[in-house]
Image (cartoon, rainbow, N blue to C red):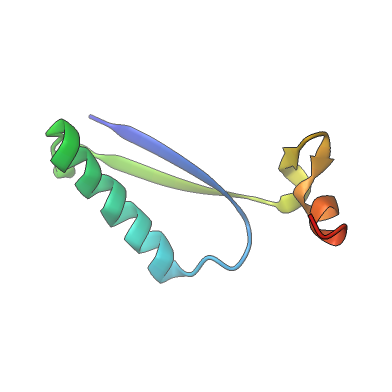
Length: 67
């Protein structure tokens, strides 16, 4: 039973986009690895940009700096 955890920054991701991710990842595992879609679990975790860091800075700060 595959378990896929997708972590993205919590921004303006729509419900439709999340559904597309779930369907796409499930299809990819079925097509490439032959995994059963009925037992494939996909979890999307949205992380606040204050809690996501790159190069020692939060994404929130980096965006304020135009990075």
